[in-house]
Image 1 (tube, rainbow, N blue to C red):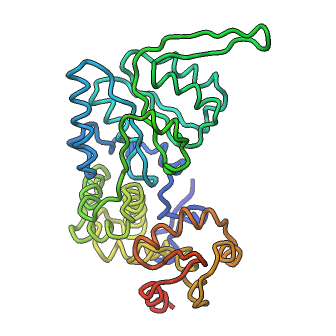
Image 2: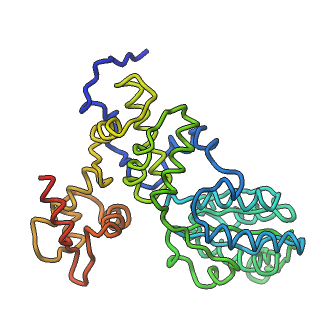
Image 3: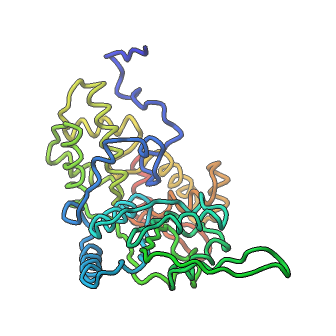
Length: 348
């Protein structure tokens, strides 16, 4: 059995997870298995913090469907990872008093996979397909008639022996989730009756989510500490809860306490090289590289200089830097803003 010494230094408590960016909004295997996160999922719209406009629109659509005794219209949820698209799908099914069957588009490799999913549905059930923008064209085409007319049009055999067969399906609701709306083909996108963009959360909303989760973890959290943690969570609940779990680890192992203060959060996040802006070492390396050149720099040149993949930088690192006003994209390349330059100069 491994023994953790009580005299671990503040700067050594990184748990050696170099492969994971704590401020990356993508889900990790640990979070898929974490029972606390499943318990933390709200079961009603009332318990779901934030996204008030979306909840209001969905509430009206759901109540209207229940009044007419028919399934909810097919719904498309889009936005950055970690904002609650899967949770909203569960809530919709729960509010409709039906089951939610889950699939991910990359796992639906062949047309027969989607056929099996559709044939397994019962009247009124919800089929949730995550990363729907990654569905292949053959599978997608089978969805057209299924979504529009609740039937499957299948071609059996080949050449002269080919024959068509139509299978009627129960009326169901398809909920698609995507982080790349533009990657979904127009024919598929047009078949969704409802389309909702999941926005980033405010500091106050994240603070409430953090407080709610801290109670599940039996943590005593200072009010100011919860707000400070919310400010560095990049508007994303998944990041907020991940940072809170890491702060809990630091508090229990290094400080032997369940009391989370502002000072403790600062020390815990410093051990992961995360500062008060919510930026980690990769963010600062990116900004430092740009700071060496006053001219716009191409993405490929930045990726080569940092030894990272250009698509990862574009979709994972850059969005938050743009959101907080540190970075701007120009036709000629990436360029630091005045406040971005001021920040990186201050941390040298």
